[in-house]
Image (cartoon, rainbow, N blue to C red):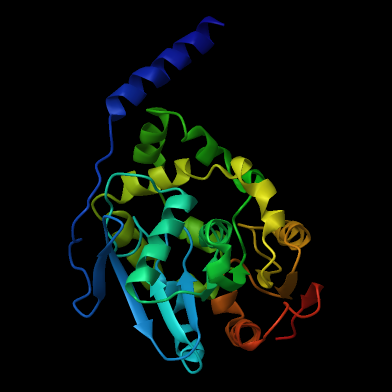
Length: 312
């Protein structure tokens, strides 16, 4: 008992030493010179807006950016107006102090769409970005035409213990200072079935973005905003057509969660890609982009419900 008390006291002391993490509301060092930015919802947001036709907005996942959609944007832009953005605290967007929950990020996306003159839109999202997409549908269902989610991260049961412990004031700051930027190559490798995608360039880019000012504070705030236990029962009320695109070998968001989400969403279809991890838009690029484009071009429902496994 005395030893446990000593350990607890040491943790409290270290958490006090960790102090607050600093945010960065303004431009980041070495930002791309050809990038487009706008100020919405008190955040400097990087975005792209290309193509003509029915609008579709692309929402990236945690610790990622709109670059996730590089293989997808040119295909969709053939028939759609495609808007993609770096969410607050990610990519080249600002890292101001404030709310980083999926609800707040959803409002950020809506603010960008309002500025761009978009009323109704299809929403495509990946991983943690899927929680933002579902919040968009819950907050403004009349403006969401259809939804496509890649390997969604939307349930409390998906949160690792690291994220749960990080909710505690002081403890989260300490944990992030000690561990968050450690060995990004291992975290990236976990996301891919085919390890050839884990290139040195990708690892170095990830490390560079993690070291940008304000990133650690923003990502901790985003982790603390993942209170899915407060909202996940409401997913059953989302009745837009939904396509779920899932890597069969995903170790980050397992297929079991995809099957659960397909049951919770009343108008959903699950498409599974073999030999594929957390990024079907990369590892199953041809098949998943084809399926996404076909889904976005459909009218009415999500087509036949249930689960299908793609041939690649």
